Image 1: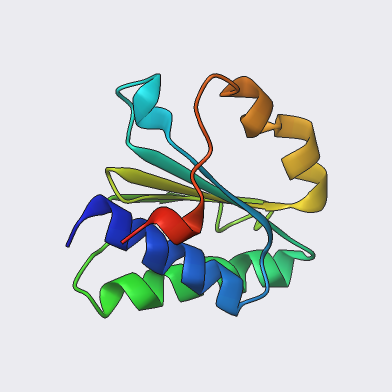
Image 2 (image 1 turned 90 degrees about the vertical axis):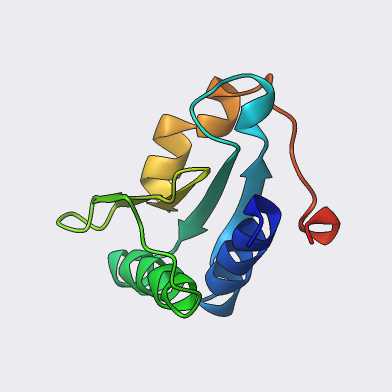
Length: 116
C-alpha cells in the first residue's frame, strides 16, 4: 500500500467521524520527519477519541498499526504516528493554539482528490 493510499484512508476515517478542517500537508517537501501531516479538528474530547479510534480501526483493517500514539489521556490533541504519515487530531482550542499549519507554512497542501 502506498503512502498516498494510507493518507486517503486516514482522511476518509476522519471525515466519517465528522472531523472538521481536515488538512493534508506534504511535510516531505521541507523535512525528513515524514511525508505527510494530516491535521483535523474535533468539537469535543469525545470526538477527538472517536476520530482517533476510527483512524486506527480503518488502518488495522489493512494490517497497518501505529508506531506511536500520544494524547489519549487528555483527548485534546491525539497524535498517531504511522511512519510516513503523522495524524494530528485537535480540539478547537488546541488547534488554534498550536497552529501547525503556520509552523509548517513552507510545506505545500495536498488536495485529497489527488491521492490514489
